[in-house]
Length: 400
Image (cartoon, rainbow, N blue to C red; front, side):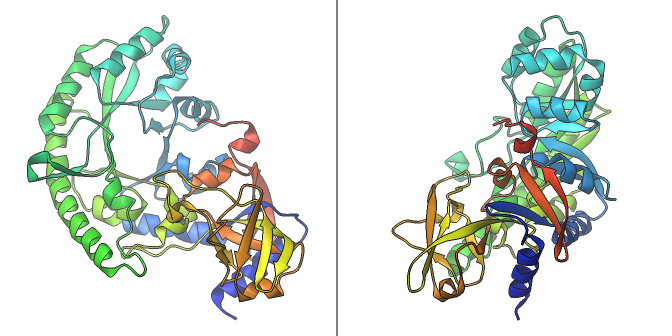
């Protein structure tokens, strides 16, 4: 029996009393992945990216472990909810246009102390001031640096289009603008190198592309390390008591942690290890989050149909954004139908051994987005469910 077959047997036994669709988290794999993130961070604290987890119980579980500190959130409403729930250090990773949220933040000392908001433009400061609605609390601010690699005099850009602040002078200028503006305080810098942390460099069957990605990432890491250090020096000249410099992501933890200028690492997907993180040379995680769909039809030899399963992930549309049939091994999509809204045909020899009601286990392409489809996660240890915990959706919280 292969390791994957053994996992399938465990998951089937653990969930025998549960009807599919059902989502699980393998706690042994989750904890092993957490340990690996801490190891790769080399002594620097790991801030957990909540968008990749979207379950308060699992956020609490990982933050109780040595080596983890703080949450990186994805909306202001989520940040305030987490802070009111007892999370004391919440960094909002994206600028917000939530007027009501800013009014709530600026009016509450507890929230203002716990939540740090993201800024990369003076216009965002003006927006927050208008939204304050009389709230007088000082708003903690983090400045985001654009990490993109620019080549050929800027004519070629590699990296996500996020912050407009690219140079040390631009970031320092915004730090001065914040310092001059009453009611705000710069406490941190963030720089997410998604073209390194979120792009696999060992794509199966594509050796030339993989080599090109590795060459690009090597150049990007060198350039960013120098520029980030210069940015931190420039900002510290304005804000000597800067509290943190956040960088990285699951795919770049050890590389980012090696930079002296960085004080903490962001990571979240590495806890669940969705399918997009199979193609890295820098680490190997264990799939921890899976979902099962029930077999409801047997339309012919070598084919079964499961209920639902069309759960595409965000990003540029393509086959790599689809969930992947994982257990039993050897199943594949019908290329004419793919993953369907209400039914999904699957092809392959293992289909002939599946009966009506059997579970087919899938892995989602991206981490936390799975939780937008399920209101509960069943936590599996060995071959039993030890707890069932709500996702954000299960708590009635759909932030995006």
